[in-house]
Image (cartoon, rainbow, N blue to C red; front, top):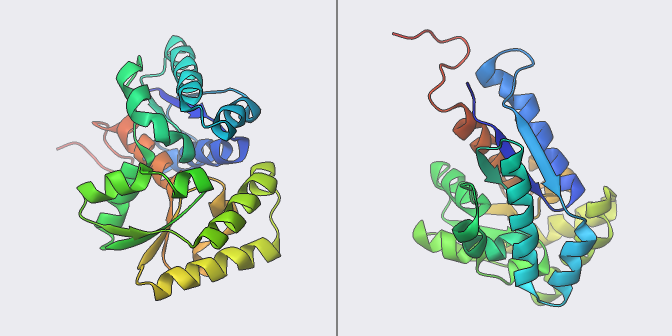
Length: 239
């Protein structure tokens, strides 16, 4: 039997993409139409934003822990959060959580390492880009990183909160991201982390000047692997 995945959601678009990826790609491991049991809980993005705007991160942690408890009561066996920004309080949440977690930045770093990347461009919300969420993890992997200029960070943050979280995708905003990534390429970055879980809806690998690390799908695939560890993949027979 596969493990029951709990999704601690924050914004609807990123959480939906994570959920859809788990369900759609589960069949490759488990057979046609099959995927692990999945439960999701989310407080209003508005509640999260009240705390984030006031820089009251303990409030963010409390919301995540409340979701964790509800998902445990639903039968979830481990948790993921398809939102990079609120990983700023991951250590506190993990310590107090009733269930184990996967860390989105650590899963991205593992993917980057497996693909041979050494210097990552970090994109996402301003609170994410200006935080230690990725630097702390990338140091463990002996990787370098860079973030966009202050002006570019402001443009990216605005696009995320005024467009992407509402599912609004504009060609002009796609071009803004493309130019930012192009500038990061000239700074020696060899891949870009799409570190807001909505960015993959706007920036595809074909449109990016650098190879992309899609944090949403990377986390979903890591959850699938954990949920199915020990199971015999479809198409393979036991010895």
